[in-house]
Amino acid sequence: MKDTLQRYQHLNEDQSLNRSIESIPEVHPKAEHWDLEIKPHDNLFNLHLKDVWNYRDLLWLLVRRDFVSFYKQTIFGPLWFFIQPIFTTIIFTLVFGMMAQISTEGLPPVLFYLSGTVAWNYFSECLTKTSTVFRDNSSIFGKVYFPRLIMPLSIVVSNLVKFAVQFLLFVIIMCWYIFKGKDVHPNLYVLLFPVIMITMALLGLGIGLIVTALTTKYRDLTFLVAFGVQLAMYASPVIYPLSAVPEKYRQILALNPLTGLIETFRFGFLGSGHFYAFAFWYSIIITIIVFLLGLIVFNKVEKNFVDTI
Image 1: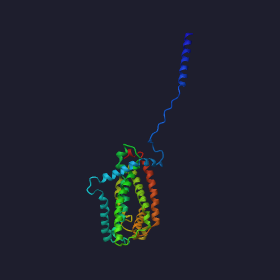
Image 2: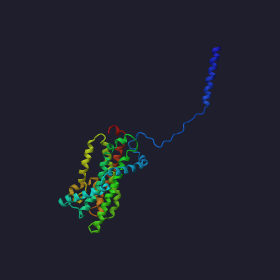
Image 3: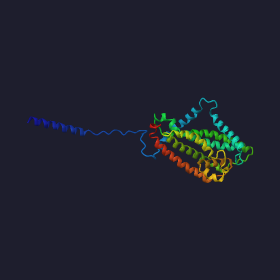
Image 4: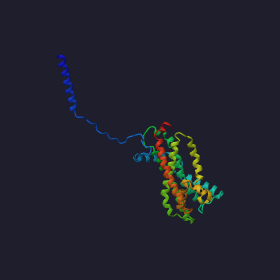
């Protein structure tokens, strides 16, 4: 009997304890709010462009870094912006203008070659520097998080500063030839200038993103880009007008997305040549396709490139 009473007493104590516990109000942890959540990419087409906008301060910081570090401890500094296109134009004038006698459609050779050089330099710089962004910044990417797209975007913007300086040189020389009474006539197509520059930037960025994504596994592409860009210049109307190309090859050359852009740039500012509507719109369509493809490929590779670089 005594054992039974003790078990009954323990049972009552356990039930009383359970009721006491149940009577305690449940405390819910306060919901935590995070400024940034790093999550794996769940969708190939989720490009996280909002994160890029949130890191716009970092973009301007990288642009300033590229500009300062590249010309630090140089004698001429930013004057190299002028020296490069000037010497290139002089060489083109001597070789292709005087020796090869290639037509410049009645334009002064210096102005003709300078217009092509300034436009081409911006595209080629965007392409070559973007194509090695993974390799050149692998140490940074492996240590701290930030939207990886910020790095190639900073290259495009910093090159835009360089282009602005060279474009100013082009405008000054163009105004001087107009003052001298040369056959230079800017027209309304000059209003397409912002579209041309945005298209060139996106084309160089798109191709560069594809190349840099592939170079994480295939390093040979780095050497291919190095001399491929030089060869591509001769397939673009930089040192010759499209009208100077034989008719049977003109349609093939028009398949180059840069053809319509450079021809429109030259026609708008100098009034020489023709506006090839098909080539211009073709360039825009191809650029949009290449840029979107580059974003998708870059987004896919950036998730695990640190393991393969």
